[in-house]
Amino acid sequence: MASTMSRCLRGVLFGTVLFSRSAAAQEVPARLQETFGPVLNLSGTPTFNFEFQTAVADSNVYIVWSDTSSLDVTHVYLRRSSDQGKSFEPPLRLSNNTGSAYLPTVVAEGKKVYVAWHDQGIQFRVSHDNGRNFDPVVTLAAHGFSPRLAAENSDVYVTWTELTGPRSATQQFRASHDKGMTFGPTLALDDRHGTGVTEMTASNNRVYMVGDNIDADDRPDVYVRTSPDEGTAFAPRLNLSAGEGPGQPSLLARIAVKDQKVHVVWEECNDLFPDTCTILYRRSTDRGASFGPTQAMSGSQGFALAPDLEISGQHVFVAWQDDSPGNFDILLRTSNDHGATFSAPRNLSLSPGYSGAVSLSAAQSHLRVAWEDTTAGSVDIFYRASGDLGASFTPVTDLSNTPTRSSAPRVFASSGGSHGYVAWLEDLTNENTDVFFRRTEAK
Picture 1: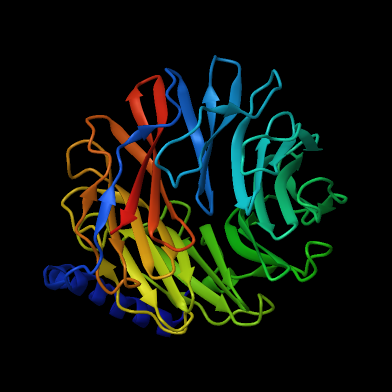
Picture 2: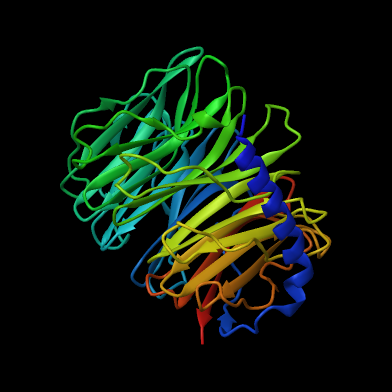
């Protein structure tokens, strides 16, 4: 169980959450102005499109997704924009097997675009010309699911989960050091009751993974694994949530790395059928070799769920959905000292409807936030942005504004931050979901 000090800290934070709601009317006027492009339907088929992922490099924007073209066949598609999201080329089908292809993931590094997905194992394709053309499909593993990608310079890393029995799995990993042309041997990283990597990233020739593991108590914990040598070998994993007590599930971990500092947030609940959930944060200042004490981002009562995490320079941003204000709103905390200390929670949505599924993007001085919100009647995608690292925010904007359900937003940005992009899923009918997109630009 949490220590007495942690419980007191969470109580104080809960008070600041309530205060932030009453103080929201006195927000600093936004010092950012943006223009919004039209809403674009990127998939545009009468079928079920889902599981989209995004990437950006220079002026190129990439969206991949799965499209169920029939009851038995699902394919992976990609669309590319070379003009900062103003227009997109026609969809390119990346998968070519007769089975179902799904769970795609994409990263872009300079002119290189890497895509991996599940299709009778783990499949991989690379483009060397900003996504115009792709090399043939390479099968990285005959079995596996939930692939994750990371890339840095000439290195590209792929990890996935492979079942080894009815209640056991192992995390697998392969690395390429020639821009995806060839891959080294497969490394088995775990052999436990259940493993899974939620995110992987690469920085300064190191690889970082965060995920959850279900051990003998059937309660997942959050762990981090690092490779100091470009994926040749991995250090033993570190359990970041073990100190929270037995029987408490730790889920939805996110990771961000900058220089020697590693930041991790996750959702910690008091039981598999919880009455409270908290957002917790830990950081490492030595490239993941060790981590400092746990900090509670949210209060000690109610449900704080589904965190997101972003960094820009020395600034760290953590957002989540929280029902402590009376209904689920989007709360944000910021740090200006690499995560050593954080501001009080700030209520960004402050709406009478349900707000959830928050997504953050930080680039230079720009911070963008998108989330689902029911205030307009149906579920829409709401949005706010800051041009001064969260000191002030633009008013809330309804980006989708449709009578149908808009969900699963993902916000991202150009490296300089002046161009922002938001993608989401739009349920046009019961059997037709498409991938929608909208761009923003700082004036």
